[in-house]
Structure formats: structure tokens, C-alpha cells
Image 1 (cartoon, one colour):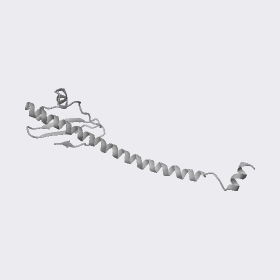
Image 2: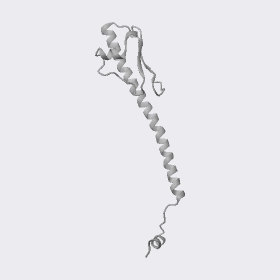
Image 3: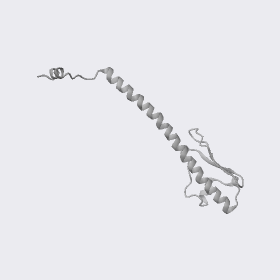
Image 4: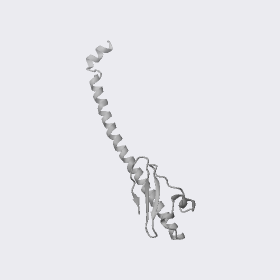
Length: 124
């Protein structure tokens, strides 16, 4: 018995081109939706990581101000790292720069100049 006769008897046939194209279209739509979700999650993770870095800088700056009576406007992240108030120098996951602003009793840490144009806010 030939193979094509066997397929006819069993009722088997291959997929048509239309069926394959529909399956590929459905898979591509699902992939597109998943990629949008991935980008959103990645941005949230970067923002959260940046906020944690700002919290660490804030604590180090507060400690430095308490120990040395330094004005908030004279503090820099580089100085805090070099003086030993931070183990490592934090870097923004979006390529931004941390900025310390403040007066004697009030500090504000912000992230400026991110490469992707996102706003990570500030920490007070």
C-alpha cells in the first residue's frame, strides 16, 4: 500500500497554508502583547532601583551632615563615597545622575538626566 493511499484511508491530511498563517498571526500578536508587558515591568524595576539608590544616598548624606555639620548644598555623591559613608557609588539603571539639594534640616535627592527620558522623582 502506498503512503498517499494510507493517508486517504485514515483521513489524515496536512495543514493548509491558510491554517499555518493564522497560527503564525496569533503567535505574533501574543508575542507583541508580551513585549509591551515586559517593557512596562522593566521600567518599573528601573524606577524602583533608582528610588532605593536615592534612599541610600539620603541616609548617607544625613549621617554626614550629623557628624560633620556640612550644609546639604555642599554634599555630592562622590564625596559621600570617598568619605566612606557609602560602600559603593550608586549608579542609576537608566543612566541618570544623582543630585543632592538641601538646607540644614531638609535634604532632597533627585535623579536627573536619564538617558531614556524617564522621571524617577525624588526622595526627601
